[in-house]
Image (cartoon, rainbow, N blue to C red; front, side, top):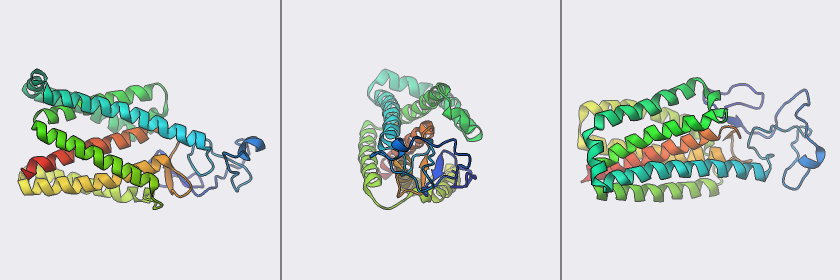
Length: 279
């Protein structure tokens, strides 16, 4: 993320600090007065200078809506693939048995497809901003996560799977509507969400050795709560606007899509864990 002086404001990338001013000094980013004074775009207070790569209060409604539409279109395809294959893994017995019989192979494949690429994006974020390789990167990650989710779904009771899928859908839709409608700005909470995920990582590792149903139930519930907040934060980072402190930049649609995709998938797995351990 970056502040209004153009300096890095933290280790998180793909968003800008939105206070309404962007201090370009050479004037090369100056656009036509007719464009910036149009009905769809307000004139920034710093003499009409404009950052075309940020989604802020001076970005035209058309550009903002185009960004949102692109993110949610890609996200819909990802979720359709992941939960379509997972549903097949639950309902189609031969496929179910094939996954369970070769679970070690598919687990390794899923991790190889997803984890190394996601780690490389942390080190080299600009790769995700270059077309068309960014789509291939996203496809590889989606395939890897789909394999892992399908493998997990294959060992679930069909009733638990569909309860979890339905609950996840209702929660995500509700949180999305809330994030779009509320006047509260949650974008500054990304730091707390990140810290919470670090804590949950250690608690998850600890859970491997504890192997207690009550512990697993409590961990899944806490994880679902943090993920719910993360969905609100990521949604507001995507929609932006003058009331949002931080927001994704226009060329970061892959990061925006991937953030929401991982939130939703992890929320589904957490809810499935809650239903499984509650029995």
